[in-house]
Image (cartoon, rainbow, N blue to C red):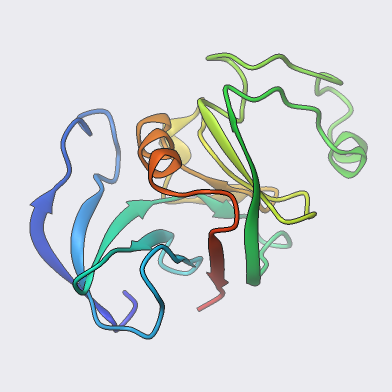
Length: 165
């Protein structure tokens, strides 16, 4: 766990299906409210709130060889986004569709937040059992319930800090 966070027993509502329920935690770190912090080692995301608090979400992260870290800004948000696998992914997985319309079977899930001009996104998932694991091609996966919650709380321009710790 990041040392600036301590857990408080305040689980968020409507997370019965979530393998890692989101919760409100105490935050005593240097980042401003509205900042998203992702600990790839911990496989958790923190949205920094006012008054020394944060919301902690379980996430799926990049598998070995697809880990990354750095600072990005949310450049675009989409509800039930379409998915077009990038050429690099199609080269590894030629069995993938060339395009998939948004919907419940789409691997991007209910919402996507695009990170700068990179190929990475924070997005929902049609595989909630992958939350808490390192299985993606670098994207940050969340349950659809959690990504919908985060989507409503952040805006284009939100700072996202990915820590490889």
